[in-house]
Length: 263
Image 1 (cartoon, rainbow, N blue to C red):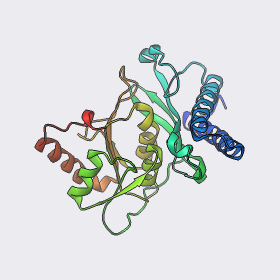
Image 2 (image 1 turned 60 degrees about the horizontal axis):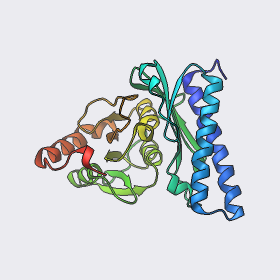
Image 3 (image 1 turned 30 degrees about the horizontal axis):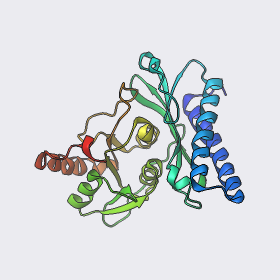
Image 4 (image 1 turned 90 degrees about the horizontal axis):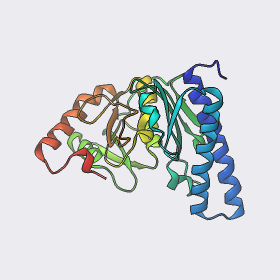
């Protein structure tokens, strides 16, 4: 596996972590483990498995993981893997919900160049080694993916300004891949996310031909000193201008709302 492409490595590691997490979930569910313990053990298992595999396969690379300490030497590194070992911990801890994910991405020069998003409970892994083709859009209102708990201001703006409808789903990876698979059209988000939440989904969506950017249209940059990366837009390319225009008008109208303030 050491000689495999970075794209294949991302898929392999996401698959391995996803399989292990599924097995853990089933085992702990049978034993009557509490939801909180299930979530904690899932986070820990996913983190250690991914870090150990990367140490074996790409020993010279650095790793930034949601569940690990931030080694600041990554800032001077040419290659950094940014991973979310269990995206959607709440959904993972609520069987049989399937909308949780594993994120594995490689960043070079602040750009996500390879990645994989595993959706283990759905039996799907989408990766940059073999990205899906851009699907045809279904007829009807624009479908905007959003948090099932608190739709962000960006999602609400896009849905309102385009006459679209909000569709609630769990993890960031599940929402992003719903767009890539054609189950939604737009994933506009503002507030409360970090680099590991969206790095792998952005890599996969871009490889599949979707528009990806910050919500002001600027490029997404990774491996920053501050890992807070609160906003982004993933959408079908033909909808990008409409979504960006809607977001720009909303930010111009209300100086009280900026992406960094929206949680």
